[in-house]
Length: 284
Image (tube, rainbow, N blue to C red; front, side, top):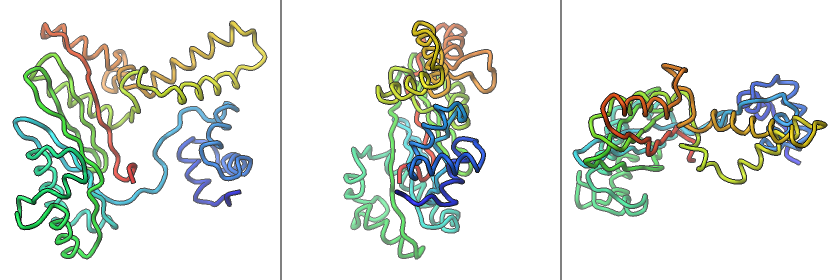
């Protein structure tokens, strides 16, 4: 059994919005299993939406770079926020984003082993080591993503909280729709969707939501239960799928409807193809 600590109770409180006392009880009943405690609170109808955030994260920042051919984003972690705010760290972050956008590496490992344009006698990892030595603190290039530009897509990036959160949105069907992409990226940064569309929701997640829904409506006829469970499942999709979320600037429209509306205005068939939403530390 995992010892229930005050920090665990606080995390459960942050993630569920449930009172401290109930959180402590739920963790004790779940023998310290955070996810089981959350599930039990939801089955009891006490907790509704659950935040992914809540756990203490490592420090770091997300940077971006853009070329004629692609947009790249990269997360670099450090030990302290003091170093993250240092101009040398910020310069290194911009350098790495630019390097990724220009060279299109296939993986973190291949990127670390390629030659650094700042000094071709060094690999990227060796160059990183020189920055570590200079700052006196370890740095890790945690992850990156590259979104190619084509003659049929529009892409935009939004950075929030000084690079602690980053969102990228791609729409296909036309170029020149960066403003729309930026609006949706800002929405994604605020609303934290987990999936693009409901078909991306893993089967085990869907099964868990159905199980929680059934636990909340016990004692009713089976046909009634099925309708209620489906309604709860649809409400879950509306919460976690970007395409189904209500646009934060105009809740009368879903994100899908927003894209369709813009498509009609410009006479194009626009499609929300993908989004990325990163928060510093979640990949650690």
